[in-house]
Image (cartoon, rainbow, N blue to C red; front, side, top):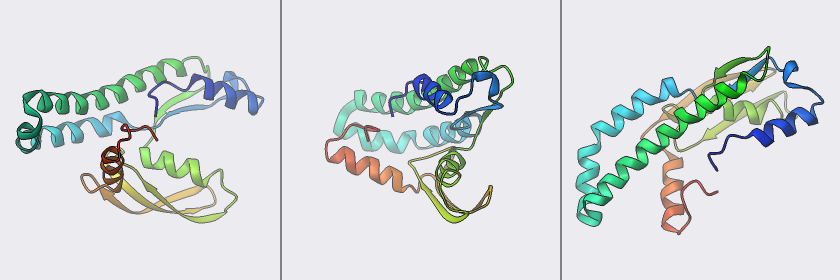
Length: 173
């Protein structure tokens, strides 16, 4: 959760697999900002008044502004990261650059490297593009989404708020 593009991780994976950038067919980004941006923008705009009513009495106008900036900074970081990823992908001559669904990325990174041929897979996060939780059936080389929970219903949000209450910085886990 540093927000830094994982150049070192990518180079490590290439070395471990004994391949070069020329051997890579696809470079994937962990979230699809095109699917995420408008729903989150709409949610933030449609809830701005009620959030301001809640925040203003406790933290004043600076708290309201800080909350709005924080929401925008998350979206801006995702868009900037997408741009960095797309630019970096140009170093892979044969590779196609794709933005993948966030929960699919989590599920694939767990199931496809596991020793299981068949498994249930559960992803729980604060938010992906719009889903916060998704349940899959994994079999062979496929993941079939079976059910999902959408924002604002989020166990990940509860986890974030509880760890913040305990004094941990957001996304520091």
